[in-house]
Image (cartoon, rainbow, N blue to C red; front, side):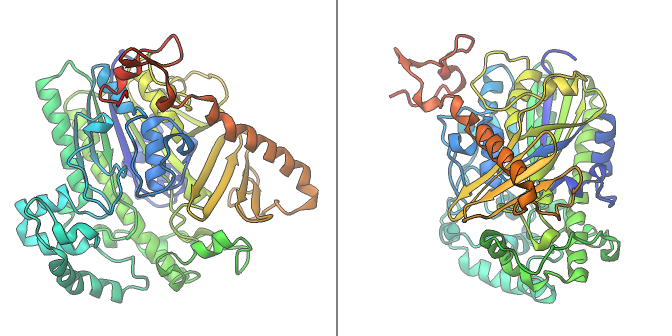
Length: 521
């Protein structure tokens, strides 16, 4: 592999590994990803460090856990005193582009025009509320579909003063919503599952791909000798579960695998029991027919993304770039999809919610399927390894680049999965030898599963006296793993020498190299 390959980093939103064909979904919704997984490196045990959108994306950007970067919940803002992989790649000669969902600013505020402050040379954000560049593009290029696109957006406060001309779009949004989306929701078994009324070519998923391909095409036309990094970040298949035609009917509900059932009628843990109320999910909880329909729509959105990834794969092939390009696919976290009577993500640390696909394909990648533990912390150092960057900021993760080259390497640290937001506090450890221990912030509440013998996580051993010794051992391992983050300095506390903020190890350059605009006062 040459020293400085192009890197394409593709991320889907709220897609667990178990819903990808290569990981055993049983549904043919990911033929492109399945091919890449077969011909490249497939990591079977990759976990979200924080199974929630903004915190985990901040972790991927920084290589640091939420206890360090501070984004422990959605609608917070990642500050620039923590350098991102984009800062480091850019400072080492990469052209860095990012398109789609970043989720590093509060959704209640308008999207920033770009994410230059996070290190991206070019960026076009479009996120869950859909307000911003994508909606503006619809208005300018496809005005006949504007009311539909507006109706699909979220009712954020800034609708009352939208855009540079300060229009009040709220009345228009209310009218469009009532005429277009409300009937679809009323006809559905659950208000958050229905077919998108927008043509597929105008959907966010296609728009994000279009922006990304434009960036790569322009760059390779004008700077063929300079490597690029392109982050393609899809908003789907995140709820609402609303794929456009023909994806809305592409998969028959009766062909969908049924969800893993609960082991009882109610959770003893209040945090889990309360989470079943998300968006009125109890309306279909236990309704197998409705849950199969939900899963069919979900797989429709997944197939839509897979088809867009094929556009990217074809572009690289047509440009003869595979000899110098690495493609990475992962997700920010999973979605329970009715497994264990639960939906979406967060405090539910079951396999569907926390285990993510990780597929690597391209130059220098050896076909391999591995069960080595990896997590969201590991992307930053891996990108640096591929880019040949030895001088880099301190991170908590460990590069998986050697494994992609077919090297054995050392054993990965055990993975911590945690969420400490508002009243939902939960922490888990995933061990190399196949255990999951989860502790809830409630007296005596927890889960313990031996995943090798109980992959569906139905036999909770946490309360069993005969397994108390193992539980105590796992508690000790959890504590040791959880405190690892404290062993790495925080950048905001680095000492100042003259007008530069220096890092504390001799093999690193000045901090200002990575974040030149950092406030040094």
